[in-house]
Length: 168
Image (cartoon, rainbow, N blue to C red; front, side, top):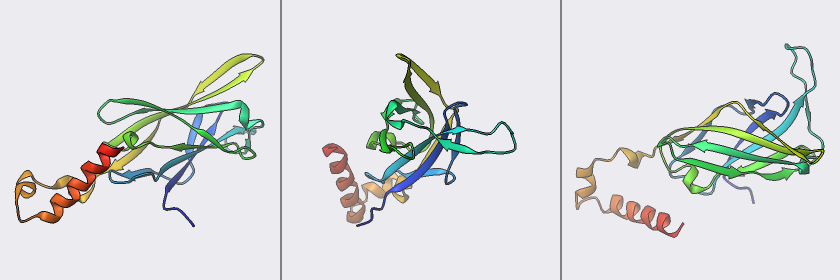
């Protein structure tokens, strides 16, 4: 059975730490749950010509680790570790936890790529990449509407959301 995840791809040239987005702007919704994934493909630019972008997947992907530093719109910081998803293609997966999509706005991120070379850890930090968390139609509701006893459906939905947050 197929999933309904929002999957995005980031391509990282590990030599230059330059990020390119594989499928455009990264966008999630405040009500998304367990569906926010970012895939990271580690590559090395093998061309010396600045007009040509020829990438090769890195070898020995299992020797690398990838983590994402995230600064939320409210300036809270998170670090999320990626899991190796496809060794042959050097693709890592970052499953964003609920607290990485719980504030509406723009999230500023960078990727740290680590590898041990000759018993020495090397770390490169990427350029900045952003993702957006959009609000829900419920985000714009007025307090007067929420206090109105004639709005049981809204109350029911908000109570369910609060229950979900409590159990996470």
